[in-house]
Image (cartoon, rainbow, N blue to C red; front, side, top):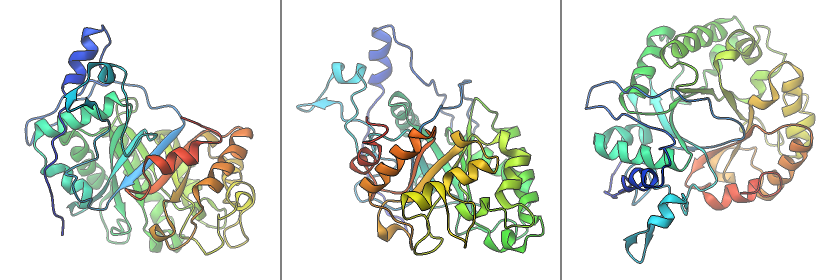
Length: 348
């Protein structure tokens, strides 16, 4: 059950202040009337690095996503802070915020909370995120849904998800497909479903206008799967996917917990699934975002403390990687967490 509290986030002053300085709004947005469809202006796919944070938990005192900046000084709106995009928020350092989850049955948790806000509030929040350089997306499925195993039609499911993205003024969708039974069957059903689904979703959410990411578990890039798993998905529809938020966690107590295991050589249990091994299998290195839990309590295993992870990022960057980091989840990972993780290779 979700409980909501009201928090005002006035931010329409941003557009006026920027206009006064002759600066365009970085991401114009048209917020629909209830039940209508959003039309977004064309914009380029965000460049790496991507700093992605998921939000699924209910957070006391917040109704909708967290405010992206504190632009009041002594209780008054500060023109200087607005035009300089001063960001003093819980999510400073991130550039993608994923509302979780959209399910086949409809939105849940933070995705549902987003729908309870009125159009004006959603528009104001989205404008503030755009001004701060943060894309606001929805994540689909998670561990709750098993779309292939339950017989969900991939095209209809993609069309429904796309309609949600458009209706509620979001910047795109993340596909957290976790149908382990379908993938483990190794009969091609999971790969075929994901291929058709991704093609249909991209047809509705064109490249350059909307973000589409996938969030596979790292082992699904291993060549041990006879039907190809995510290596096959990447080969068939990888060009339609902007990047992968790879889950390097929940795969065994000692899996991906050292820089060597995370970056260069995975265990024999999940061979060829360290970061650079996945790239060697043909997946573009600049699409491989490293996913980790915020705390040991946010996953069964796979946790690395932020300072250690920061060192791994430094090593990876020296070898040509710059895709970024994904974390599960807000508010356990906030501004201080990502600041530490970025400190060695990507300081703010």
